[in-house]
Length: 147
Image 1: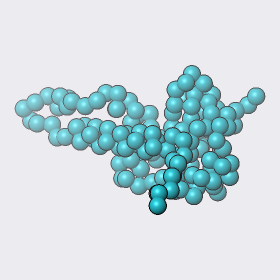
Image 2: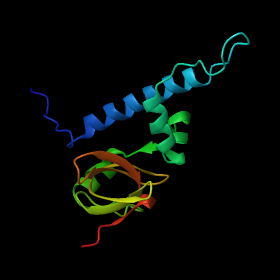
Image 3: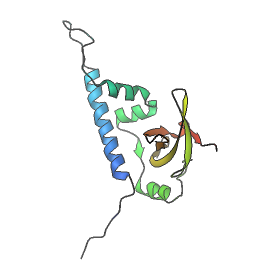
Image 4: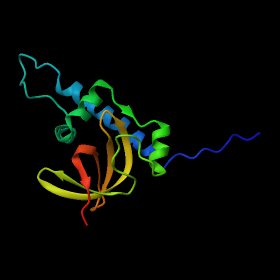
């Protein structure tokens, strides 16, 4: 008897890999950043990734807290299937491929929702920007795109 063929929802595996990579980068950064200075050495001689530092500084405080503590509920299979089929879970405002606007450092960006990353405590989405880039954003950072 053959095993049933299962299909993974689009982008799910890539999102898990990206999340694991981000957790590893933040963990490595924190280990390097918080090491104690030695009395005979320059206190600013710590070697750490400056790009990771910039990403951490740009993160929403809730996202950084979840990464450090390991908390935060990712989307479960039922919520994910419902969302991809057009039925938003309770508390989730934006649907797949919905146009959104978000403000980043004083400028407004436009994009489309391509994935739901988490529902609790605050819904978080993966947004494909109009320039082709991607960004993760919390629901309170987004508004529906005005035509």
